[in-house]
Length: 239
Image (cartoon, rainbow, N blue to C red; front, side):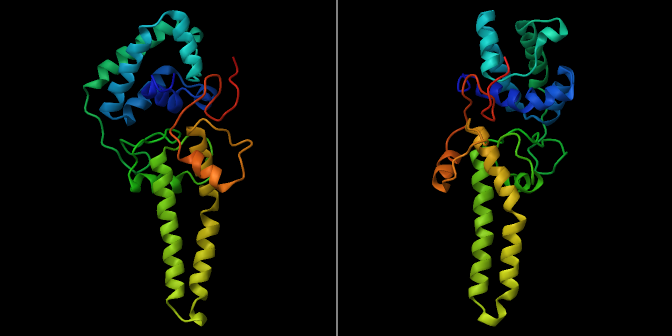
């Protein structure tokens, strides 16, 4: 399901997830935010997925939206799943030709991806900015590129400090040792939350994760997916 409608899955995961439903935002607010941050290719990809979904019958559409963990119910606005998707498609088509802002690593600027959305093919700059700005945020998802670049650069700093310490006499290593310990302490929480977001993106739960580092690394390297009948954090859907 998520593989067939991957772009729609990303859109729903970033905008119509449970937290936004609890915030009481309207579909118009959600779409406005999406168009302010999305690139043209994203809009076109989601529009194509919505067109494909609308080719199904009403029962299949409802089942698909449940499988994608969509937390918006059009019935609350006296509408139907099909009517809601048709309205969304009109919005996508209207904005697909509009100029889109370039990708940015500056939080809040045009082109910035919403915090809970994974960025596929993230650049090192974007990955590091998200790693630091989402310091204690375990909700949402992180793509493989976000995780790999952040972890690679984190290890690069660690190796650099170790090499610098080994290059000076023993009695002069104290500043480097302190810097290394401070770096480990300062990045412990963002490393944990990054791992949690990466596990969410692979459809795994962080409630009872395995404690084996090798197993966690294998899970982090798997492609994003969401099992039918579960949320992106691995909890059963409330249906």
